[in-house]
Length: 530
Image (cartoon, rainbow, N blue to C red):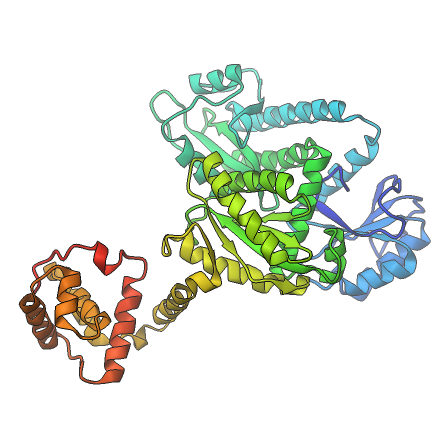
């Protein structure tokens, strides 16, 4: 399975270890007689892992001499199938849900027929395949096609006679790198964050084109760009672009080195543990950790925006974090999500070790990426079952410090607990608008229309313990100005500020509105005051 890569398929049970030769793939169909295939691999298509049919298929495979079965999880429990595999002596391979069976079969068949090639030959063969994919896609699209890695190097391009091409593509082919443009960062982030094909209209002399991210599961590997043919982009052209990206992902994965693939394997294992979709008993030892190890989690992210994750930037952060961990903590596991990079540290005094590592990651990654990088440090827990809870803890911390609400590059929950609580309360108010005070909505609407700051002045007065002198000093206004504002807001909004419960609720709601804004001392008074 090292050949196909961990984001394509994962070996979860191997009774005879990993150094076992296999011969070919066969399709398991309960209505057909399974051929005797010594060393074969049975693909359990359309079978749920927790169905009796899966257990029966494993037993049939063992009886016909097959070495392994391949199945997709699709959220089902693997335990019944694994128990049958252990009893039958058959290995179990779990394929990622996203990869089509026909592509997986082609990849496994190619891998099984090429096991004797050395790494250099494999790299050349994969490059040839990428050129073939570019040509096949261009033949359907009608325009030149280029396949790029994440550094915008052109790793393959089409050479179909009569294909439509422009000067930008010619220069990229000659230099083997896309010429830099002012909108490069924006365009590539748009493509790598999109779920499908992204189209770009003609701009100057650059012909209209379409692009799609090349991914292995959720991992970005590069991009495929196609210039629009004379007849425009129809449904066949779009399908060809999608299929080209899917096939390119398989070959780009295979071209990676063995150490890279091992990092990917461990990252995928950690990701499934963080999501709570893997069996801790099966995945934990495959990460190389002991059952009694203490654990701590680090989360790393650029400026954090949950609504618009930047897949390309996250990939660059992941590459840098992986490099740093490879030097400082090689046993750590690194996983990437759409919003953050997670580093698992396990062993004695895991919390202290994670803190030391995080303090190195932040400045080094910030310097290397030439952009601010934030980190969150979890509490220390025991065992892998705590990982989903630790991930939630990390995400909440990153929402505060990577969201620019704490001013700290590295934070723990203790550092940002009050901000986390306020954000949770704000989420509840947004989910239940009926809980919002109607008088406060009236007051904030008055401020919006008149350009006044009555609500902000009320917040300052409440936070000053109802001291007009102290609040006026923080607002940089005369105390009489603040007294006038307080009288005015009582006329506009029916809020009983003499009632301690209403004062508390009013302060809390105003404070939630102000979450993420500069503190009082950093803001000018502004406004007309009324």
